[in-house]
Amino acid sequence: MREEKIVLDITSDIEDERIDKVLAQSMDTLSRSFLQKLLKDGKVFVNGKAVKANYKVKEADRIEFQIPPAVEPDIVAEDIPLSVLYEDDDVLVVDKPKGMVVHPAAGHYSGTLVNAVMFRCKDKLSGINGVLRPGIVHRIDMDTTGSILICKNDRAHNHIAQQLKDHSISRKYRAIVCGVIKEDSGVIEGAIGRDKKDRKKMAVTPDGKHAVTHYKVLERFKEHTYVECELETGRTHQIRVHMSSKGFPLLGDEIYGRGKSKYKCQGQCLHAMVLGFVHPVSGKYIETEAPLPEYFKHLLEIL
Image (cartoon, rainbow, N blue to C red; front, side, top):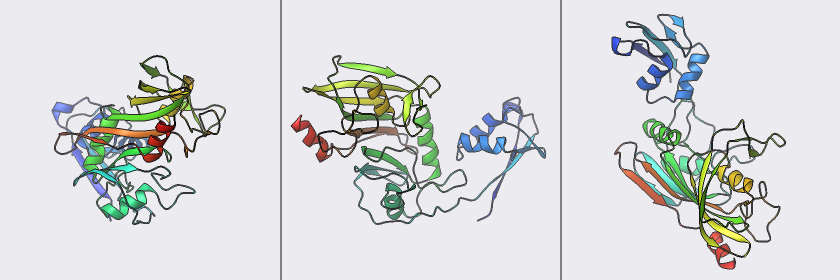
């Protein structure tokens, strides 16, 4: 595959706009982060000269840059059964089981969701930003179960990525936390970033990224609470960090919790139940619901 050359001629109606904004509006199959990197690396040219993101375009300017070909990832497709909640030509929603890693990484090169999706969808997966990303537009932790959305083409990928950025996707989780929450509902607002003492962990920190979690009590037990958590933002480990910061860590969470649980949880008790989004092609609202896994229902019965 060869590099694709892009040429844009500026007209008077967009004169004096920043070039990063012009590119983002003109190239809806490329992400903003990829375009920003091209600009930062001096790979976007106006009338033959490299420009930065703050350059304001003029009428008759000619913008030129190259898009590198998508690179095939060194990932083996594996025939792993998937629990499908919704599927069409553009998107796939699956119910991820506990213990399955979303994307191959050190220590997990096989048996991942991506390995399974590549087998199911073959070559019908999004490939943007110069690297073939096999459909993954968001993630959930290895021991978190439930709904995850896969994109089958670049148009769907960028459309869903924008919805995630705009916080317009509905994501409701079910969780069992340690401790009894007195109020029926609440909002946790606290920026999340790397823990200063342990870089492998996340924490509520002043210099982190804005994060908001809404929670609602579904049932109270003697020492635990069954809650629904709805994400307004989607930061790494957000629900786990936010609930722990309020003194209600997730049951079974050995990273942010109170040590090893006396129950057989196999990691944090967190399930991505409801996923709602606007379809990237039809414009219709799609909502899926992943049923509670057996281990989760069993714990509720015990509690």
